[in-house]
Image 1 (tube, rainbow, N blue to C red):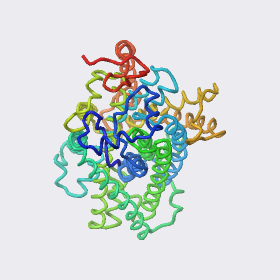
Image 2 (image 1 turned 30 degrees about the horizontal axis):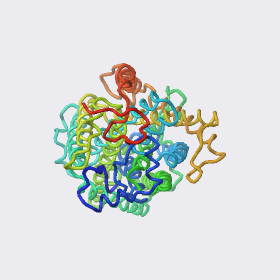
Image 3 (image 1 turned 30 degrees about the vertical axis):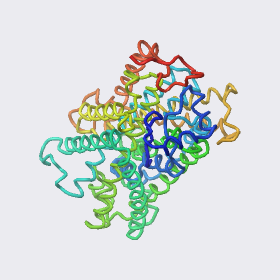
Image 4 (image 1 turned 135 degrees about the horizontal axis):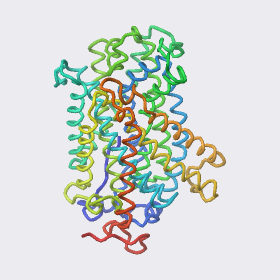
Length: 532
C-alpha cells in the first residue's frame, strides 16, 4: 500500500521543502497533466516501490485468498486451484493494455482519464462512475472479510450470539462498519498516520505470506496431484457438468486479482510515472499470482482432511490454517490476515478517493466543486473521504442478507470488470482505426498490442457474464428464495449504471468543465467551472 497520499496542494504547502519539491517537478511530469488542462496540485513524492506497494496492497493476497477459499473448495473441489493461473493469464492481458495507457497518460483517476482520451465524454464518465461505485462496493466487500478472521482469533469479536438468526452476516456487518469508520477517519484526517499504517501493513502482509507458504510446505500430507481431483463434487443436474461448477468456483480467484491499476492512479504523485507505473502494475500482479498460488497449493496439500466441512464454509482457509499450524501458529497468521484486511480496506478507500477527486476535478460528480476541495488543515479531500465511507456503510445495510458475503463480493467484481471493459473496448477501436499511438519512449506492446487487446476484451466479457449469471448458490443460496436475489448480479449493477448514466446525461454533462481551482490559467482544455 502507498506510504503517502500526497493530496496537498500548492496553496497549502506548509514548508519550503514541499514548495521546492513541487517547483522542481520535471518538464515531462508537468506535461502529463498539462494535456488534460490541469495545473499541478499533487505532490510528487512516491518512488517505484511506493507505486508497487499500492497495487499489491489493493490486490491484497491474504485478504482475497482467505475470504473466498471456502467458496472455491465447496464449488469446485481441490481442482478449483486451476482457476488461479487461468485468472492470472486473463488479467495479465488487461494489465498489459493498462501498462501502455499508464505510460501514455500517467494521470490520477486512471480508468476515468484513460477512457476520456480513448473515447468521448459519455463513455469516460460511465467508466469513472462504474469504477467509483465498484470501489465503494469493494470497500464493503473487503471490510466483510473481518468476519471470517476475527472471531477465529478471539470469540469476543462475535458480538451477535451464534444462536441468533443470521448471526454471522449481522456480525460481519457490524465489524465491517467499524472498519469503514476507521478507514474514513484515517483517509480524511491522518495523512501521516496513513503513511505509517500503509508501510507497516505492506511489510507484515508480505512477510506473513512467505512465512505461511513455508509453514504449510513443511506440513504437507499429500502430493500436488491433489489439484487434479474434483473432491467428489456433485454435478448432477448442473448445466455443463463440472465445467459449470468450475465457473462458480472461479469467483474465489476472480475476487483477488484486480485493482492493479491503482499503481497507475498514483501517477500524479509519483516520480517518473511513465516508467514506474507500468512496472508497478506488472510486478503487483505477478507477485500476487506467485505468492497466492503457492498459499492455495500448499493449503490443499497440507489439509488434514479436505472433506472436512469446516473448510468448505465461511472462514474455510482460516480453519484449515488453524488445523495445520495449531492454535498458536495459526493465530499468528490470522492476526497478519486481519492486518492485511485493514490495510486492503485503506488502500481501496484511498483509491476511491483519488477517482472521486479526478472526476470531481472535471465537475463530473454531483457537488463536484466540494468533492475536489482539499482541506487546508489536513491536506486531504475530507468531503470525498467521508462521503465514500458513508455510502459504503449504507451499502452494507441495504444489501444485508444471509448471502451478504458472496453477494457483495460478486457485485464488486462485476462492476470492476465492466469498468475495465469500458477502457479496453475503446482502446481496441482506436487500434483498429490506426489512431492508437503508444508513447515512443514508454511501454509498448508493439505488434502484440492488437491480439492482447482482443484477448483482454474476450476475457473481460466472458467473465462479466459468468459473474452476473443468476445462480442460486451465489445470490440466493438459502431460504427464503426470491427471484430478485437470484438476479442480484444483473439488477443491482444495472440500476447503478442505468440510473447513474441517466443522471449524467440529463443533468451533470451540462455542468462538465475543469473546476477553476484546478484548471490551468493559460490554456484550459475546457471552460473552468466557477465556485458557487
